[in-house]
Image (cartoon, rainbow, N blue to C red):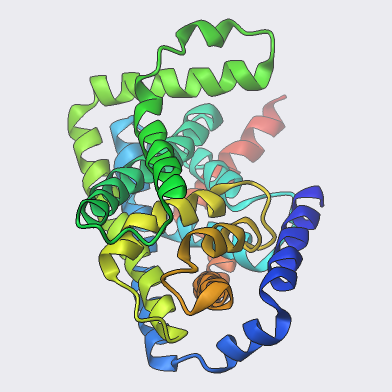
Length: 315
C-alpha cells in the first residue's frame, strides 16, 4: 500500500507540474498507428525478456522450459500492470512459479534478480554507446551539468558488478548483506557460466533495443520529432525510474524520469510525460491480454502441487 501511495503521489506530482490540461491535450492527440507499433515492439521485447530469463535459469541448472517461462513471465506482467498494490508482485510470482517446477525458491528468486540486474546492466551499456555518440556529435539534448550526471549514472551501473563488495556480505544489516551477496553471486555466475552469460547478454541486448524503440515510438505518437539515437541514449535513465519499487501499476517514477530527461526531445514536459504514460499503457494492455494465462494450469505446476500435497500427507 505504501508503494502504491508513493507511486500515485509521484504521478500526481507530474500531472501538477506539466499541467493536467496540457497532458490531456497530448494524450487526446495521440497518433494511434505509432502507439500500436509501440505496443507490438514492447510485446516483442517482453518475449525476449522471458527468453533471457530462461537462458539464466538453464545456466543455473534449474528445471525450466522456455514455453513455460514465457507463460510465467507474462503472468508477472499481468500482476504488475493490472493488480496494483498486490502483495504478490510480478517478480515474486515468477520466482514462486519457477520453484513449483521442482527448483528451490532461493535459486528461483536468484534467477529473477539476475534477470533484472542483467537487463539494466546491458541497457546501460547500450545507452552509454548511443548517448556518447550523440554527445560527441554535439547533439546532447541535456544541459552540460545534467549530461555529466547522466554519464556518471550509466558508468556507475556498468561498474556495479565489478565493485569489491564481498566484505559487505558480513554486514549486520540484512538488506546490505543480501544486496552484496547478490552482486557477488552475479559476478560468480558470469565467471563460471560464460556460455549462459553470453546468451543472456544477447537477449538483453535485444530487450534494450526493443524497449528503447517502443519508447521512441511513444514519443512519435505524441508528435515528437525525436532522434532515435538520443532516445536510445536516454532510455536507461527512464527505465531506472521504472525499476524503482515505488510505482503504482508501473506509473510514477518513470514519468518523473521522463520529464527530466525527455522534455527536450518531446514537445515540452507534457509531451515527455504523455509518452511515458503511453509506454506504461502498452505494458498495461499486455497485462490485460495475458490475463487468461493466470488461469492456465500447466502440467509442471500440477505435478508440483501434487508433490506438495504428498509431502503434507506424509507429515
